[in-house]
Length: 169
Length: 78
Image 1 (cartoon, one colour):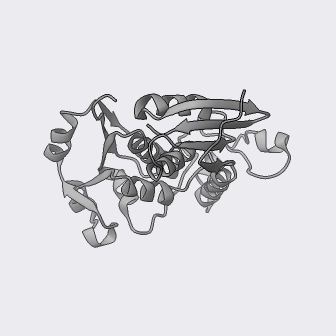
Image 2 (cartoon, chains in turn blue, orange):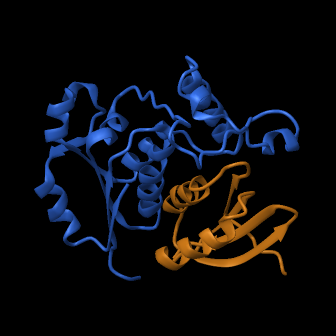
Image 3 (cartoon, chains in turn purple, cyan):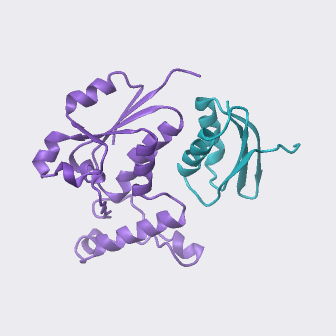
């Protein structure tokens, strides 16, 4: 077998949809005998909280399909044309969109973010939290799960310098 | 195709990417070298995914078949 490949990912987004790619890729990398480091910065930091409460919004996200996770196949396949003036102004719209996306993920057999995060940790994926953005946004170490390392740009770059794949998500 | 005798079976029916790969890896880690795992998946992406996983990890796919949306893989631990 070839020598161990290394994956380095910067996770900078904290919405329900964009929380998936870092954890999917890192857990899959570990399952393929690769090393992986996830560096959480800016809006990626909430992904490290003990209790994750992620949301998704169709506002300013024109490619996001608005579909229902129930009903007939035709009904589920219908992409609801919701204008931003509604999705951006109706109270609770994001909560509803989040609920629908979570339900769709569940129905399609997609793991939850919590499950994927746990599987990453079990398989040795390293999590590094950006201390600078933690200070800026007021995150504290006690709010995060165990096993997180704390550092900055140099810590990520040291690892990424020898990585075979570096991604910014 | 002749029957392959598996030492273990892992049913990943209903699971989507990347769960079949993660579960397969976990199962293979508990096996002895040379043993065979029968993995069942309904994820249509898993045919190519399993091949890639096998290429990287060195655990060989010694047999596979597809039957109306169900994909079966026989994986031999290296």
